[in-house]
Length: 133
Image (cartoon, rainbow, N blue to C red):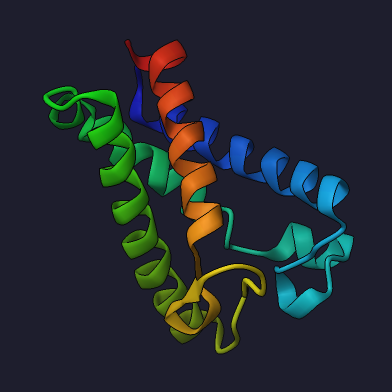
């Protein structure tokens, strides 16, 4: 699969998952709780989904060496680290916090939610199963 296609797929999945999350929970954690069309369209935060899927795609064979449960645990760990680092880079670049989690176990100044890392890990495993195997 072309790397650009993987990046675009990840970005689109991110956009749609954010919209679905917003509709299902009525919780908004992007743009300092100002989820307006202008904020949504101007945010660079959706790059994190594209880069995340791209990294996962590049390292997918490494994950294949482990059973599904270990893959899941490793993904939760790596996703949490990735979100923390990306959040700090985003803060430096945008000069404001572009997302912040408020519910559950929240780490890294609000950039990491264990609940969300678990959901992302499950999404990555589903995408891996249907798209990359």
